[in-house]
Image 1 (tube, protein in one colour):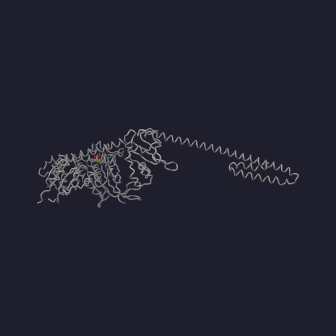
Image 2: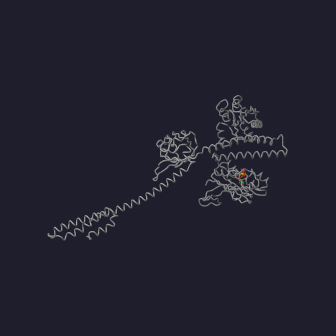
Image 3: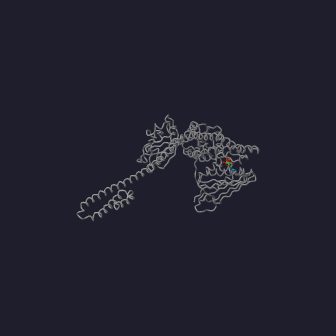
Length: 128
Length: 481
Ligand SMILES: Nc1ncnc2c1ncn2[C@@H]1O[C@H](COP(=O)(O)OP(=O)(O)OP(=O)(O)O)[C@@H](O)[C@H]1O
Ligand SMILES: [Mg+2]
């Protein structure tokens, strides 16, 4: 049996962070850490090399988009999967999100079932 | 003498009109008569007398010729004088008219105090500066006309000349003024926002209409700039924009939590809810969804107002959209005791459009029909190919010049909309008296949004309604011919 995929969660809203962590569990993955800003997300990502990061777009310190760009620019982290969550649901927002190299974009409010499905999809062929 | 005088006298009438040429003909005629007079006077004794006679005749003739010439000249003088008089009269009338026109123009221009009206020559030197311009830019006419260029009042960074230099090096380009009038030069007119700099150093956002000014021969003599100060309007728009997106973000985030945790509770197989609990939480969820839809509608309306709403076009099967709108509304319809029917072509009906937005438009019409129809009523959704006549009317059978459309009609047997109120249906927040009287919930954004989506797809949205009997909305989208 594969070890469960390791997921980093970052969202400045505590309730949402908790909800995302629950969804990660429902998807059969483990939560490496759940952090509240972009700078922490980057630090933890570099130290822990998670399989997937679920990032809120608007966060203090560094936005989800900036974190994603920084991960992609660094060979040590450029193979992490990234799922962006955002309150911005316009096609422009989605395009801008995916342009940073993110693997998927889910507008808020998302359904828990939908989020679980996305996490499973993105961790399906994880190397672990 | 009378013989001599006669032809001239007769010719004097027309002579004044024929001028110099007429005068010459009269003289020749007179000389011919003289030769006839002289020839019989050949005997020598009469020679001296003849000479005298000849001299007299000659003198008479000359005198006569002079008189004739004088008469002709006098006639001409009179004629010229009357002509001059007429011309002078005409000129005076024309001058008076011109002055009146100029005065009207000036007084109109001077009466405009809220808009700046600036006229320049072809190079931007100011020639006209109305009180509106004085007020807006803080300089009196006398300080500006013939001494300043309109460029002096523009934010220089907006008149970057580089672009023009590269594009058309010899279109009189390369100057800031050429940049300013470029679009108006190319397209005949131009309206857009520019930043004006006032005498006391303020920056104003001004919507300026630029048009070329020509003289009577069509020769361009300069440019007109009519400006409206939009500084406050634009600031308010920006504020409204920021406010709407802040609010929608701030509302969406807690709604995400509410809906997410509700879902966890409702779908937890390990801790099933009692029927009552499920019902209460279902109500919570429905209302959270309603709030969410309201937030989305507000945000969307703001985007439409700001002209910032874009479509993601694709090939869309309207039949699928109609069916899923029916599915969405079915629960509510059943609960209210409203029967629904769907009639779509078997092979579907594909248009080019934004699936998400078209779905939203269709949902709005169907949810209205269900919402405004009391128990026992019917709601019918019908999708078909139809035709738009040359005069814009929708018909079932094509006529010459008609173009094909996909026609979605949503009919109900509900409360209807009074005739007098039908014209305002597509205005934001408008709700008909029949909706308010029956206390049907809603804010009046659905139709505004549906109309905006339809228009953006090049389609039309029409309504036929009779109060107390029912309503039909017809949404028509262009089909490829
Ligand atoms: N099928 C219908 N029958 C009767 N009246 C209607 C119907 N559809 C729309 N109207 C009238 O048009 C008004 C505007 O409709 P619209 O969908 O914009 O607003 P709403 O349904 O009241 O609120 P919202 O859609 O924003 O929740 C309604 O309030 C109602 O008065
Ligand atoms: Mg409505």
